[in-house]
Length: 221
Image 1 (cartoon, rainbow, N blue to C red):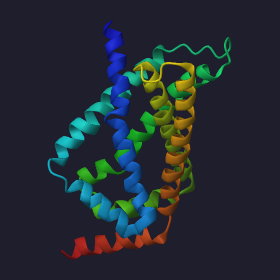
Image 2 (image 1 turned 90 degrees about the vertical axis):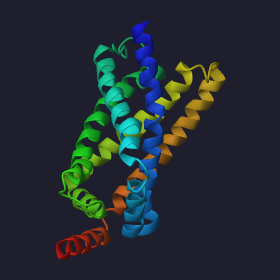
Image 3 (image 1 turned 180 degrees about the vertical axis):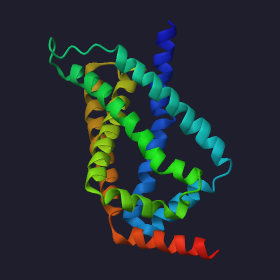
């Protein structure tokens, strides 16, 4: 029974609030596509100007992410894929969910270290995050790793949403589950596209120029 509730909490946190944060992060990055370097910077600054932003992030992102990630690794360790015996869609979903969960957790930790941690220790200002991302994605190896991490995260989110709807009794019958499967597939395609096009946009030299200007202003002040 204890494991049942632990898994329920794990499932719930993956959608609320982490799913909401995932979408918000996607929209913030997509601001780079819509508004260029200035649009992205404005979105970042607006988010960090929210009241009690530290507590919002602590209880809405970091603690849920810690629980979901660590317990998810435990679930992956305990899982027993049976693809060799039953090579059907649900078994593939189950296996890929565990694999992408591990990849996503590693990617998020790495991404946070490259961005949020650098801001926290004073190595980078919020206005320079666009330039930082430009430096990352203009390196072929790092770009490839980011693409892998993003696709894994998008699948884990979308497939996890499909599983959430089933485990919480929202989609009960076969027809409802089939419809939700198509919807979640559409979500996967959409969020993957938006994240990847944002990633490619960061390669534009505009972001490097904006970061240089921000650094010059900081040095002058």
